[in-house]
Image (cartoon, rainbow, N blue to C red; front, side, top):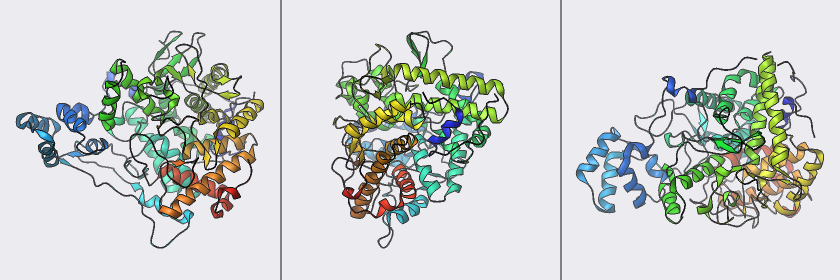
Length: 556
């Protein structure tokens, strides 16, 4: 195996050769994180619209007054929600028209934004992306009372379309483009915003809305921090060490009490005592922003609704909402089993976080801390090899910890261990062959090999997964395959841009030249992480943006 060194994590921040700053000097434990201080008097989480508006919320969302359930949860009550709810009980508006009049009289609706049209005149894809950063930047130091939006101290970039708040894992891939565009100002501001969220809530929520606070998303904060000083990421990890440790404590909450063969919150202790993690959500209700959709799935299922809602929410925490990856039958949302799965991407990320903490502690000469987190990373590496590497298929696969099985379906998540340097040379070569044979398509890598109608399945490709693939494969000197993926992606994105004037959330990588489809809502334009990854690829492979067809890309 490639030896586990905290220094090696720097390669995941675009293969920075962090040969300086690696220290083996290892110390003190941090105080309990804010998320665990509520019993000691810390600020509790604000109410979600569902909690605050009760029967009114249910009536509005189930009647589909606004088509997209996110519209209502982003509306701002004009007065205390308790008073609005009392008025609703008094008036009892009947029928959709009366209900809509009541809602419009008592709520203010933020304007829906088309987001960043093509600038006047035809400009290059690079120029268009550079101009989008300001169009997608928001600043919310103060928000109206009763708004579901969470305030932040610094400006930040939103994805676009219906997503007009800060999102967690999206932002790392957006920051790659900010760096390539020379926008270190926004990069620094966004890192400060994420640190603020960890300090205030004990974790980074899925997004900066009250209804997202019960879950997080793939923990990329340490990778964002590393982008601040790419030649010496340990310097930034040392600076943000308290927040890194608080985030780790959030993901490991309950580890001391969980028995072998069981799970608690996001921690899974396997029968041999090894620890891995899973996605989770602290609530077992329909999601506020997708209430009608979740209720409909539960009504069509014979499962206990609370367990199903938890699995739906856990899939939302994964960022892959939704994918056959989480379905027991590979086809149906009603068979979601997200909480029964130890995912390869999440555990690779937590290996990276533990390694970064060890490096940050070493930089601060906190020896005991450095030793502890290095040992954690080493143990997780061993568990990933034992449970997530599948020798017969030659790939990394998720692990169903409840019955000890692995799904046979390959997904793009198999590339995460390469991104973090967890694979041996033989493992990486094997993964590369599987990617070339099963995931590589004309427009980039496809998310899975299953066409289920869900957005995180075939034929869709997503910017973050292209980046994980290219950076991971390049790390193991599979340069031709990496370059082919980057080229096909840039050509595909550029073709859609030239035809529509837009960058979109996801792309069809099988039939190129069109946005992706499927899922709960139409494809969104904007779009933060597409802009970020595409801009970074253009910086790394400048000639690709000038190619007119995928046939001109290098052979894999």
